[in-house]
Image 1 (cartoon, rainbow, N blue to C red):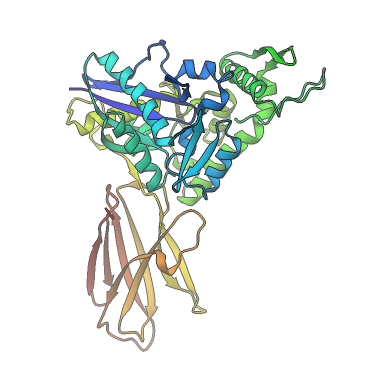
Image 2: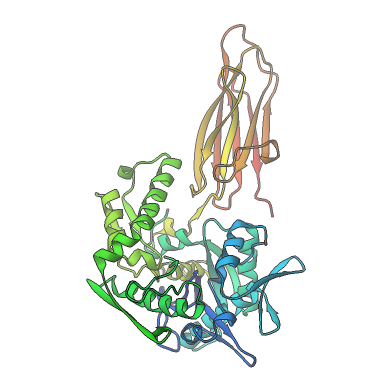
Amino acid sequence: MAAIGVHLGCTCACVAVYKDGRADVVANDAGDRVTPAVVAYSESEEVVGLAAKQSRVRNISNTVVKVKQILGRSSGDPQAEKYITESKCSVTEKNGKLQYEMDNKLVSPEEVAKLIFSKMKETAQSALGSDVNDVVITVPFDFGENQKNALGEAAGAAGFNVMRLIHEPSAALLAYGIGQDSPTGKRYRGYKHDIRENPRAMMKLMNSADIAKHSLSTLGSANCFVDSLYDGLDFDCNVSRARFELICSPLFNKCIEAIKKLLQQVGLTADDINKVVLCGGSARIPKLQQLIKDLFPAVELLTSIPPDEVIPIGAAIEAGILLGRDNLLLEEEALSIECSTKDILVKGVDESGSDTFTVLFPSGTPLPARRQHTLQAPGSNSSVCLELYESIGKCLAKEEDKFAQIVLQDLDKKEDGLHDILTVLTMKRDGSLHITCTDQDTGKCEVITVEVAS
């Protein structure tokens, strides 16, 4: 038996197959191990991949790129609005759902994703020589339920049997057996032509810039040439790696700041990390790799698997696990990795009587996980109530975010002092939460389990 892992990225898609105890990325019919996540429409056919990307200059209004950014989102979503503004393919709303409008027909983002998944399925089955449909699909960590459902449904519509959706960071870790740039326009200096309002010229320039960016990951300089870019004029520019790094410096800094913020959220320092996995095509950039090394000077940077292939390989490994393979080259504790998707907080009261919230499980906590928390309450109380909330990002916990409470009753009152209630919380791999509250003085105990909402 074999299984498949698929990663649908913003710009490219990649598929890996698990067979005979190992997972490998397979090449498409053009011989490329990564396929552009681009779909071009005409009156008679839909084209997916490299051919669609190459033809988008002359078919720009009927070519869909970066569908993952809009998949499962509604028109009021800021990310969707940003995508609609930047998209060269018209996006409209019909019956409450976003649709691409081209050649007098409407196409949903799910249909576009389905065609990309179909291409990945065809690529995998061609390599295996058999009709294998079992698949694990990777999803970004910050995808909400609507986006996950849309991605899973698109894969199902392509004929896949979706065994599991796995977070992209989790897949990247599995690949190593661990258990736990958008251009805004270019102005000619020599001819003083502004091409920013010319979609065809901009697309030509973006294609050439994309090729140059890839070259700069291995070479010290790259040539960016566009034949007849604008008004019959050719564009020819040589870009050094140093110049590229200077231009992209703000983006690199954003990446590093995001890592620092994550470390702060989970209460760790760079010294607490011993391995870092690089994933995603941009992780090939030498300068970004060096900045990560500078942040983690004593860390082993794992780069033996190409960064744009590591996520689908991990997904294929997960697919093999789910099919019951017992000969994976992984340690037993590395068989699956999941993370909490929201902050889990406990409510308390400060000395002034104001409500306070303490984060027990920050979003992104590897599961399973265990936390202890001591809740203090006035000794004059005969009962103590522990309340748990969940929130996303910087959003403050509200009453409607409360998902559980546990009450200890009939406690012995104290004239002086406080009740110390030891709370032990264990979050399992499936996200269910087991809570035990114990009064330290009397040993009185209450236990509840909060299952994951279906």
